[in-house]
Image (cartoon, rainbow, N blue to C red):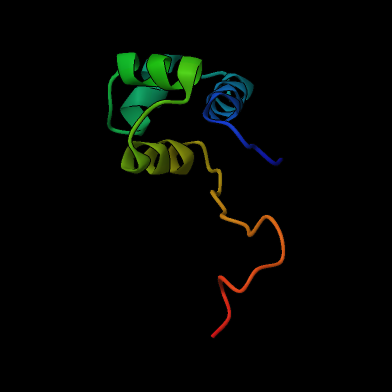
Length: 76
């Protein structure tokens, strides 16, 4: 799944959480954060990167960064 906006990431987190049958509180416990942080993240996609990494780990998701088009960015 390709996500280009923070709101898309929040929606994907919500969908994954619901697919597992977890409440926001359950995800918060597994990601070592609060239910309010999960709620805010799911609704806006706003949050800290370390929180996003803990959330994706708790949901057994993998976060990948991909180059959008040809560039010399990754050349040696």
